Length: 205
Image (tube, rainbow, N blue to C red; front, side, top):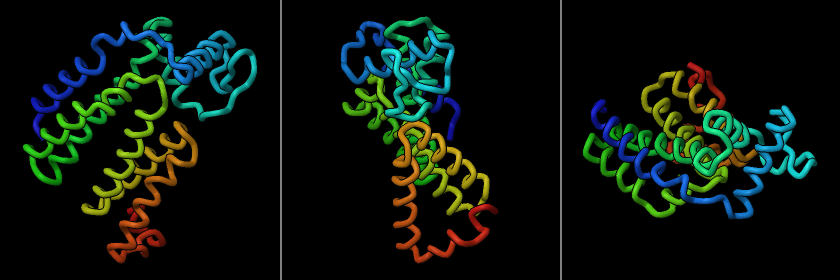
């Protein structure tokens, strides 16, 4: 990886995902639920128990609400603040794709992969939507990328990073954050005839 690539891609993604986000009002009912919940948590001074319209509401885990609360504390309660962390995670996802693609197939493939991802319509939408999907996408992707790096290099720190990313995915959207990457890893190890790795100390090495 080259530092200038990261700088250029990061600047490009920041401009693409953050510019004009303050012009997009919160109108979608799902977005409104997340924003209202974060506001009421701040008003109550309770950062552990989601609540909406005065009632506790455990429809989703806590991580995305923490993102909204942090953004509101930093930038005030605005449309820009509400859309800040989805955009920031989208930038991280673009840089992760560049790094992983570069390690697997070289710099050219890494750059093209990152640019194609950033310019895809669905990804652009999720980078602006006040929902959990972008955070989930990044944490699940980091889980799989880190696992594969651990598998290829045999270095335990990549497995620890994969475990941490999966934990963040669970805090974002519940058990699917572990079940989805876990199923992919299980199928991959079965295909490679390496299921025994799950019972060995190799993954903690």
